[in-house]
Image (cartoon, rainbow, N blue to C red):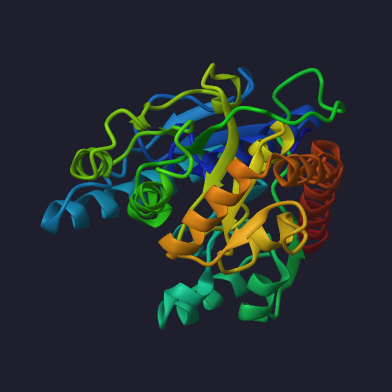
Length: 366
């Protein structure tokens, strides 16, 4: 009888956490496991999940406020507990500390092992990190993306480092190439932590020195109107474009050769990995807790700039646009990440951990 594995998704819509979870869910399915996935949102499914994987939706109504917010959270926990009873999974996999904490509470007495995963920057959590540490210590194992994140918690239970895989999007994955376009592209949810406002301001500082370049931002989210107003305020309507959500930014006919990640905080950013694979010259903020720095091999594969520093980002943009030789070298070096994060390697790490936890749990039951 195959093992049942339950995954808790914030949403089946595109995003770093959902993309990484879907990768692991598909890997489990390919290894003969009975995979069930729960979405906490009614947003449409845009990630890839194998059709044979079971899907459920329990809407958290995450934008609700006041008493409604409390009501929907309690209702979510009740419905999730009922679903867990119905599925009777042998293992639950969940990302992000708040969700890990909720699952630890919600599975009391059920004796189901949990693999939790920290995807963000725990330094930002303040006092909450103590509660999150308690939750991770009640997991069978916790997956981190960097040593720095693991060292922050110093858990008593099993800790494993497994970064995100390099998601290949074409059949020419082993062919190194550089993109020659002068346009600059960025992608992500239009939310405050991605700091697209800072990117627009940095572009504005150097616009006269990179006159042939445009800035194209792909994504949707709550900051759209604010960013559109900033573009208008700076008089950049013909140079900066909010181009909406696209399934694959690397396939757009936008003459882009430079990719920028200007986030204030990141774990192991999928968008940066995809850009490195695709041959862009990449610039990224040196986000704690070290994901971009690790990907960049400390600046050798990606040009690193300080977070929330418009002037330094503007300088980096100016230099990579105007120095094509340097840009090409960065692009070629970046593509080393294909081998470092090859999906087969990452899949093997996950399956090894999952089988270890399942076997340990079986022995404990006997």
